[in-house]
Length: 308
Ligand code: NDP
Image 1 (cartoon, protein in one colour):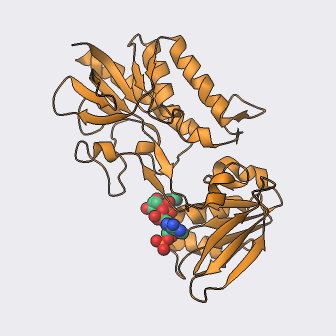
Image 2 (cartoon, protein in one colour):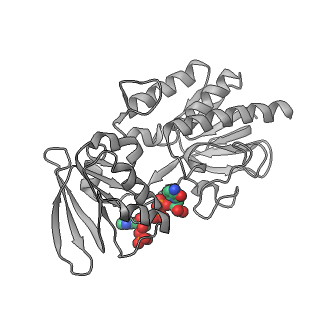
Image 3 (cartoon, helix red, strand yellow):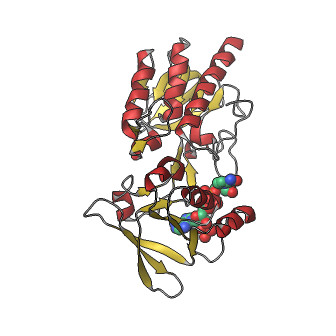
């Protein structure tokens, strides 16, 4: 039986950074990339807030660089999806979709989170071209323009408030007439003169797929069933994130929202199993913070293995 020092599950920024650091620590990590290597950066266009790229860089290009840098030091990557894990006994094991079982003295989980989307065809077609799921990443591109934010939770309020720094007008579209957000966030949003609310409403369509840019939205009032159109240049979907943790249900401790609970750095409740990136971070969710926690996970693994 071949036993790896560490197996990294998931290949977003956190996974590649964990691979880079553990490879440079001579741990010869095995990185199982999953079916969409690169994670959320692959659906982003310009990344302007990742340090070291003063002119910005395209998300997919940044992913390619992460991968290249991790492989330079001996990371082995496998493009496959893990469908089962066994954390009950050591060595831990991961089984991929073709039935191959990999064994590791330690595991780093970096399977990320997925932004929930509305499920509209036009939303999918215009993603990265005016539709976004991250105001911190893309808000800057909407200087003096009008944008909509969909959702009524804390994320939606935070995104709306952030967007007022750039946009001339921010319209929050919520499917009910009451926000889910905390009172303080609600108050801040309602007091901001640039933010207005459209209640009991959903977006039916985002235009314009023929020009490949966002020019407006069709909104339906769920009480009157009437539709109206609004001209604007950006749509931010802020209806929550789903951590990619189905695989780990009942295997390690997750919080109520399904995120992996980490303590003392990146340790989970099982010694030898570590987690980094968005799969354990529901607050910051940035490429740079994911990279930071990927680095932490590799250092934690190195210490765990040397103490053993
Ligand atoms: P939430 O689940 O709290 O809110 C999601 C919002 O999106 C709800 O208003 C929901 O409507 C709406 N929604 C969900 N699905 C759809 C859909 N298909 N169409 C239209 N609207 C939809 O997610 P958040 O990301 O806002 O927050 C997640 C957690 O993170 C929360 O615990 C939050 O408090 C926390 N958080 C804290 C922050 C802070 O403290 N600064 C910042 C950001 C998040 P409805 O209300 O009708 O269900």
